[in-house]
Image (cartoon, rainbow, N blue to C red; front, side):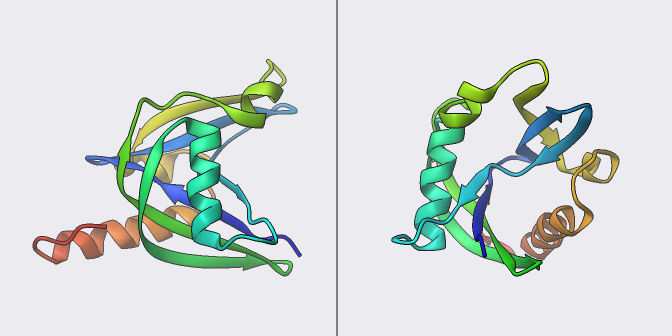
Length: 139
């Protein structure tokens, strides 16, 4: 069983995602990674985001969990972040034409048009609709 923690980093109505090209498959993924035995999902989310994107983040709320084949994924919103997104960590080391990682700001209105898992896109879109309905709400 492997657990994963991921962070939605928002800049106005755009979200930072990995644009992946691997073995001829093109898709998008939320920055994040495995939860180590000695850390909480929140700690993993913060660590993985820093490793993969070079961003310092203050986590906001957990907006959902998804489970598949006994593996649980935790999704958080970045309350605030600092830095310039730049590929780092193992993703930078593995980055190649056949296994590419590109950080991209994607307009949230386009989430239905890219190859991002529907259930993951729905988590973010539901959160954004909820925030718009609550005056003064911050992640």
